Length: 305
Image 1 (cartoon, rainbow, N blue to C red):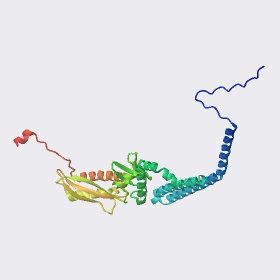
Image 2: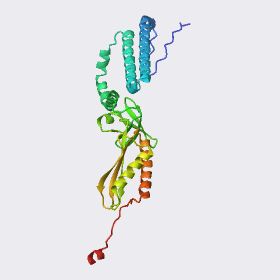
Image 3: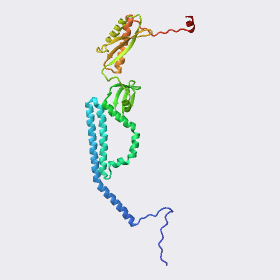
Image 4: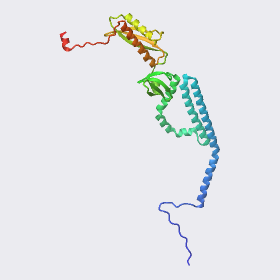
C-alpha cells in the first residue's frame, strides 16, 4: 500500500495575509508584554507621587478659596473683589498643580514643550476668547476701582435698576420691574454710567405753574410749607421754591428738596406726598394752577381781522 501523503493546508482567501503563528512571533509578543509591565511597574511610584502632589495643590487651592470667602464675609466693602481673586487664585493653583504632576509622572513632559506645541492653537483660542478675557480684566478693574457696589442703583444705557452681583465676567442688574439684566463688564468699564445711590442723599425737583395774577411770594411760601409738612425732605439743605420761568400761560416755580436715602422707592414716595400737598395748599389759598391753553384761528377769521 502506498504511503499516505500529508495534505496541504487550504489556501488563504485572496488578498488576506496568512497568520504568522511561528514560535518566534509568540516570543516577541510575550517580550513586549513583559516590557510594558516592567515600564508600568517602574512608573507606578512616579504616578503615585504625582497624584499625591496634585492632591496637595487641590487642598491648597480650596484653603485659599475658603480664606477669601471668610475675608469677604468680614469685609463687605471688598466682598466681590475678594471672591473674584479667590476664584482666580483657585484656578491658577489647580493649573500649576496639574503641570507639576505631569512633570513628575511623565519625565519627558515639559510645560515649555506644551506651550510650543500649542502655539498656533493658543493663538486661535486667544482670538476666540478675546471678548471673554476683556470682560474678565474689566471685571477685576471694576472690583478694584469700585465705581459702584452691590445694592447701588445705576443707570446704564436703557437699563436702570439695582446691582445684584458683580462677577468677573458680567454685572447682574435687577430692574425696577423685576427683570434681570446681565451687562458685560467691558461695556460698563468703557462707557458712562449714572450711580443714583453714590451719595447719601438725592435732590428732587418739580415745576409748578401758577397764574400771572397770583401772589408769587405766597405761592412759594406755601410750596415750601407743603414740602416740610410731608416729613420726607431734609432740613439741610433746606427745601426751596424758585421762580424759574415765565411761561406762555403760567409763572413756573421750581420746587427743590433733598431726601435720604436716595433710592428710587423713596423718590417716588416723596414726589407723591409733596405734589399732592402742594396742590391742596395752593387751591385752598386761591392760587390758580393754570393749564396750557391754545387759540385756534381759522383762515377766514384771520382775513377778517
